[in-house]
Image (cartoon, rainbow, N blue to C red; front, side, top):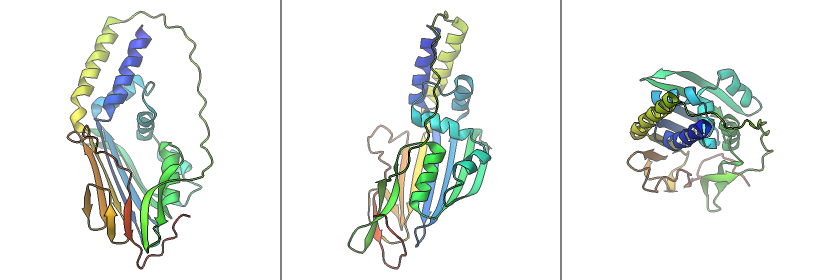
Length: 247
């Protein structure tokens, strides 16, 4: 029974954590297809407390990966991208405005290498970003499924222990109080993604376009609207560019 209640809280935590995250990503692509990607991610003290107390068991894969990333050491990140044409320009961890924060800046040769780096760092499948030839002198930046070797599978230890523990009233009260705090942190959701392309934008699915930059945002006011698709699809001019598109 105690194990069941803990698991129920972790499922609730996984659902609510998305409202307690702040993540900003800014990718700038140069005329040859290289560029930089900066990511700043932070968790409120309430979520950090929950992860520290309960770990990530029971969360969905995305939330587990975010929890792991927040605790990643610089040496681990460097090891994960060492065989790619990606340079770690900046890596900082610390408390910023009372939030546990990690800041990463990568310099990449092309979007395939950046996509591989992000897969190595945060997990995921074979989906990434690519620039393809639109056939009319323009390029399209869009999601792309690469033919990469699979990531090594993690060993999972089976827990065969029977759930025979009784509920500790104090522990249950503590967990319920933590759930209440998480509910109160939902308004902190702040996710933004900026993609800057090297040519004039002809068409973009981003809600906001400023010059050559497409901007997507998710916050507490629009998270329930259904208009939160952050997969970029940007058509831009190929004039004067030296980009080698994927085939």
